[in-house]
Image (cartoon, rainbow, N blue to C red; front, side, top):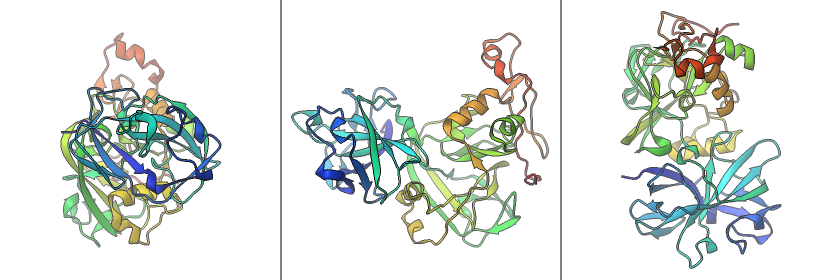
Length: 386
């Protein structure tokens, strides 16, 4: 079983300006690309399964090997072939930026002599846009990003109960036309649903929200990027919004919300006419957000569910503001725990995600910034304020 997966785009799907290539004569530091531009020709991201003795996908690590025979960019490589990230580059469209990492299969005499593609560190929407010229702002040698830092999909796990007109229904049983309960627009018809098996480790490892927290009526399993609705005084204070959407991974505290590892996990998407807040095992979370105006995000989805490419759906806005990683970290650092109540749910400051913190404990000392704050979670019977 692979320890983690890294998604990458093959060099044949990458156009570099001025006839340059990903590999060069700079001993793998990427400096030959500075000042050039890159355009991605397609969204054919490929899943590379990797065995490793540590959680980082890093340069100069001889323990990173392919988990069995695998094909990448039309070439088949033998299992146990060593792989590594050679250098990282910062790409920008003038507004947003992304970090790309040169993916290296060690098959040349000088390991940096050939580079096979680019992998992508978490950024706005994960993968960068396709068909857009991106400038290379800088390059750095020796990336050491954790495997979990690389772009990953957003979705629910099999067995998740979705609130519908018929009551809670397992997500895998839903069909097009079924009426889904939403927070803002009542019952809305399901336009598309899809599922896919992936390795349940590394950056695809599911996140579990324990029963009794964030409104969960039982343990809820979602993908790391799936966003959960959170409302607290801190969201209003820092973001001017009474409710925000936060990726499940960024809520993990190792107790009430924790990352699991499984051999495989099956993730599902639900698409409605617009991006909605829906109810999943009692937790308010998001439906699939499709925005063709953000090619990188859309390409990420199409990579997992090619049939989405033929759908007309496009959502120009999200149902709530979606917090970035740093924003979520600030919110979690200041918010108290969450306990289930009827309707509006909250907890006092002496809890950490619903668990008691002993006075004077290291947890209390480490979370002093939470003093006086409470964390509210949107309830099933509530509606968006205003």
